[in-house]
Length: 484
Ligand code: NAD
Image 1 (tube, rainbow, N blue to C red):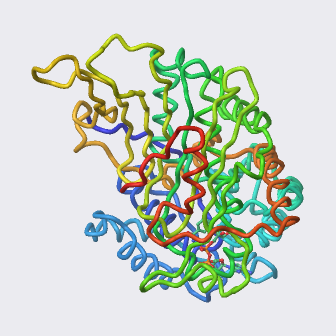
Image 2 (cartoon, rainbow, N blue to C red; image 1 turned 180 degrees about the vertical axis):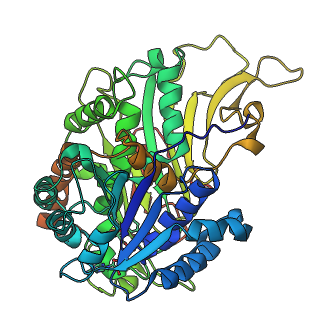
């Protein structure tokens, strides 16, 4: 099966922070891949805008090096890379001053889709939004893309929303959460809402519990000072894990449209109950044989910031009442693995007397690595010897059926950027969703601060603190193994 490429209209994409780490590692290599797929019309332009004193030729050299370093197999295609680079421009711009804005305005076209990617620190969002208007660069149909972190608590998120709202309508604002751009996250919705099989089971009658794990092997080294002011709750739970939780728990929207989906997600966040302190385990990684401890990486010997968190949440509505949602994320864990697993209930009664083991169907959605899905089903163990049962995975990625060699691997960033160009906000967070998520997160963090809560130390390369295991063990459940 050959992948269908949906054409897009001619666009100008201005990347503020176009020389930064995110632009070089994700945005520009992603755009090049879209170019190779024929999704960048020849008269479209990408305009880098940042503080560095470069001209367009210098910028193209920088982008060539970035694609060489961070691009995938496609970097070999030199001629095509030259053609892509020819569509790039650069303007040195000062977000806080006057420098560069006239030059940027001179490049501005009004007859194409205009998008502005704010790949800069959030403290510059307001300055950029304001100057885009005072210099007449943005219009009522322009779009802005903003990166995380979107605030560090409810007040700052509200302030950021209000600042952007002075210049842009909500329909023009695209708040990125790259987890939503992943193929399997969308496949989760296809499986849930495109089949009749799952929906009748998707509730507290049949689901025992749900686990969401986002495990990383990296430390906070290099960005320790930033991370120490944030921690796993702000950096990962409030946005990424919360978004995944919403998609797995939301009611079926009336259609796969931006507001329909986001309305349902918002209802989930609002139905989340406050988490009791004894249902949360925070951790900090210890030093390893050749690795520093969290506190050394953060250069803060008295830090109480968590590099790991596990928690048990509940959603107070008809569908989910009584079903625990266990969330877990951390740095320096044993493998890099992100996974959502729906664990169904055990059978009420087994008719197979030869089999005395317990069986639970599970549906796992793997986000990384190896995006895919599998459903564990129970079958008869092959061969003679009675009716012994065994659990086997039913691979639901159907790579073979779909002819995997022709399917393009689309990175989350490039998919989301193309959604911006198409004007599709479905996979972006709405302002009220972000505020609701902070509204749920804030009292939990305030509780730790008030109690001077000290994170538990865990071994690097482990699955986190022992107490995180206990969170499930004491309810006769267990975490799925973290494996690559
Ligand atoms: P970075 O420090 O590598 O780059 C910052 C960019 O902003 C540079 O291009 C710099 O020239 C530009 N800049 C700084 N001050 C400016 C000013 N006054 N006027 C104009 N341009 C200015 O940062 P980054 O890692 O690329 O991150 C950018 C944003 O993306 C941040 O909000 C960050 O939180 C977010 N983010 C980054 C990553 C990542 O992997 N790097 C991941 C998620 C979110």
